[in-house]
Amino acid sequence: MNKVTKIVGISGSLRKASYNTALLRAAAGMMPAGVELTVRTLHGIPLYNGDDEAATGIPQAVSELKGVIAEADGLLLSTPEYNNSMPGVFKNAIDWLSRAEDDSKKVFGGRPAAIMGASPGPFGTILSQNAWLSVLRTLETKPWCGGRLLLSKAQSAFDAQGVLVDESAKKHLREFLEGFAKFVQANR
Image (tube, rainbow, N blue to C red; front, side):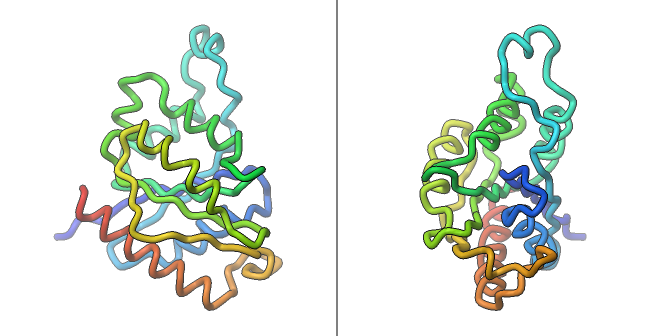
């Protein structure tokens, strides 16, 4: 019996009507056969403070997300782009998830990872995605660079309920997911 490939997708936005969370929800419904995507957000993760970590340890929301990632075969980041780079709240969460060093290896080390993103701007999230590459390398993930998903003008790709309605975007997302799923399966 073939093992189900498990991927965890993390939205880098806290907005209730986040395009990146909506993109992950669309992705969850388009995964290839034998692959499942669990969608997670950053809600409940506080700002990183080494003093707080020393005094009280890793926050529960961080520990829970670390466990979900550690059990997954692959990691999919859905990133907004703020001021031509990654969102601070998303980087903060990844910084927490990399604590402590031994945990970082269990959570990120050797894990296949991909980046996608949606933005209302005309260039998608190209600069944010580029900024994430050095972080993923530092965390010793296996970044998949076989495809890019840069959904620009996202406000016209989703309906008022956050459902992906743009057929071209759906096609591109499906191709992106198929490529990443194959990469994850080849690197389990």
